[in-house]
Every structure is written in structure tokens, then in C-alpha cells.
Length: 305
Ligand SMILES: [Zn+2]
Image (cartoon, rainbow, N blue to C red; front, top):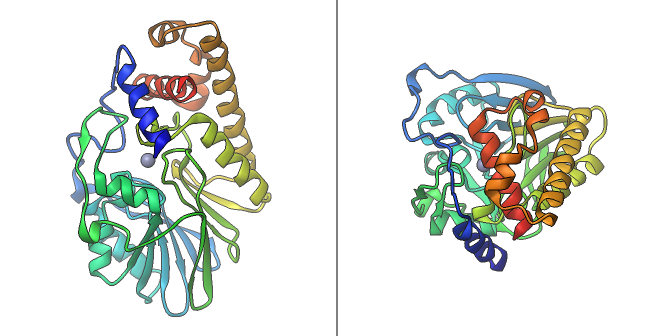
């Protein structure tokens, strides 16, 4: 937790918070009745579900289902229906890739259905203590009871249902301090949570222990783990492959190295904003101004420490 405390102090000392009003938990919710769930078949009874919030992975076994992430609470019934359409088995495990509400909002409802929520020990802590949104600067209320993972782990954990298993691992201080990724070897599917976000600049939640270097290290471990046939379910954005992951890694390293240079030159955050260090990357990444600014701020804060 020491790094987390340091990150909070670093955040508080930044001159201009400049929180952009955009992110995973918009202050005004979408019209949930209009949202549909898209299911993509990844082979070997494994599926990617897209609705509102982080991407969901579903692995169906012979006596149960392992699910990765559960989006916002109002998505529960729609996700449940989409899962029932591909398997009659009950959801046995719901894995939280990290504590953000667009991935964990469904915890209590899926627990009520009989699922065991599984997350990293620090993820549970972040949920239980409450946090501050890195995208809006607003406090995020603490979660209790069935909203929290019932089962936690520290470094690695294998979850099993009959005929399927998921290897869970914890990459340190990446998107947050409590991240988990899941690898389904029998389907060659990797679920990264928000350590990988495509089609926009990634969010690095330095207020909850995330860092650019930890994110780069996580992506390097994915590159080592995967092959050209691996299907990669990112936290946000379309299904990806290893080549896309390598591209994403290059982007992260480029942004990190440019920022290190600016920090070495003694630039303040305002001077870094003014220098527009990633302007040439915006079009390629698909960045809107708000998230791009948040990304600059996160890279700066996590390197300045
Ligand atoms: Zn997130």
C-alpha cells in the first residue's frame, strides 16, 4: 500500500488536476434499456460479450461457467440472458480484473445468482475502502457485502469448473494496484482487463496504484504468454491479436520515453500539456482530448512518483 499512498500524495501535489469529465463511470448514466449485448464466439465454448462497460469473457464448462468481469449493475439481466443463450450451466466464478465499477458493478447480483466473485487481495481492499475516480476526480463510494470478492488471491490462482480452467495472475501496479488477468489455455484466450484498452488512450489509475511502467511490464508478460493464434479480450475495445498487442506496447513505450525526457528537463505538468507530447499519436490511437489529457497526466504522475 506504500506505493498507493505515494501516488495519492503525488496526485494531491499536482498543480492543476484538470479532470476531464469523461471515463468509465459517467455522472449521467446511459439509457440502459437501449443497450444490447453482442456475443462473439472465440471457440472451445469461450465467448466475448460487449455491452456497456468493460468487455466480458465467458468460458463454459460441463458443470459451470467462469466469467471475467460483470460490467455495471444494470447490465446484469442482459449479460445473464446472453450467457444463458450459449450455455445452460450456472455461473460458478465471476473474476474481477480490477475494482472499477464498469467491471465490478455486477458483483452483488451475480453473487445472488450463486457465483463466487474472485479478485486480487488489493482489488478487494480498493473496493472496500472506496477510492477517487482518476477520470472525474470524484469520490467512489466503498462497496460492502456481496459487492466484494468472496475469494481473493495474491500472486496466482487457478480456477476450475468441470472441463475448463482459468489461470489468474496479478501484474503489479499496472492499470491499478489490484489487477488480474486471466488466461484460458484450452481456448488460447487471454483476458487482460484494462491493462489493455484499444481504440483510445488507456486509463492508468495512478490514484489507485497504477503506473505506466507497470502497464508496460504487464503487456510484456502478455507478449511472452501468447502466440499468433491467441485471441485477446482487452478491457475496452475490439478483440485483438498478438500483433495488435505488440503495436500497443510500442505506443506505451513511446509515450513513457517521451515523458521521461520532459521530466528530466524539469517540465511541470502544465508545461507538459502545453508541449502536446503525443499530438502525432492522437489520430492513430483514436484519442479524444479529455482522455488524452488524462493519459498525459497519469504518465507524468506515475513517472514523477
Ligand atoms: Zn478500469
